[in-house]
Image (cartoon, rainbow, N blue to C red):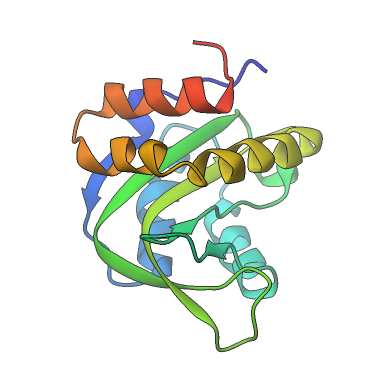
Length: 155
């Protein structure tokens, strides 16, 4: 897979109150660089309502993403949050929430890559040392390299 995780799209200690704040901050960076279409942030929020992405792993992880039609250039954005933000739980009831501390936001132009990348992320976050490395450093390059290696992406 030839998706790169660019340290430019790694955010540490992101200050956000809501998941919409997270979408606007991270999606806004992609929009400013032309990596996504104008409707990307709205599409993320809409998809998150119907198909929540909060995972109840220790520390909480969310993997927001939307259809490839909203993306211009493949990008994986990673953010650690200054304080946890509530996301709806994937596969849970409408009122089930996960307090999320780490976000892996996918902007992938190929629909087929979404599933493959999601599987690699889910497998990686089940390893406590992976999330510990992501959460314990503030160096975007270290986070990008750690994630790229864990996800089996080209470096």
